[in-house]
Image (cartoon, rainbow over all chains, first blue to last red):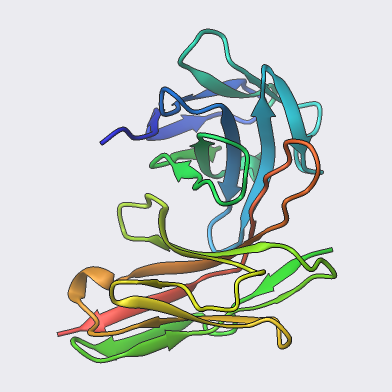
Length: 115
Length: 117
């Protein structure tokens, strides 16, 4: 069964460093998402992406964040200069179409630790 | 703004018994979608069940069913015949089919469910 994959599973970085979190969505999916979950807190929407552009972004998704689909398979989240508060679990998701009746399939997440 | 509230941080149930997880939400929209996701220790987020607000019939998926009360803005999940593999964090989530391609999920804080042998 096709699945969303994410690498790395755990990333440790120093404050101020750039990180790139990678996701491979399900191959025929067209809509892509990033969510994050700070330990003990709610899962929060970061950004949605369709047709090579951002559809919506949250207040969290400031200038330090960017997303890219550099080729036909990868979908990346870049944090330019990490802060301690960026430590969280980051989930990538994809869906075949944008309709809410279409399930968003989630990857296993990347745990980002900023020291 | 839409919000989702799960008032039970932790619950436990004996294997083979039934448990109900609560979820309430707030929205001014009339058309929306509600979801329950399961997050086992592996951390993968798995869709358990979904409900369209315009459907009066409660959704059912095998041992999982919901009690959707639109007027009360309540969306509880019932797990029947609980199994050890049901031990997980359960998240209630909400989506409004906004115009364009906006399809963000809004999440509750989650309920940690432990199924005891």
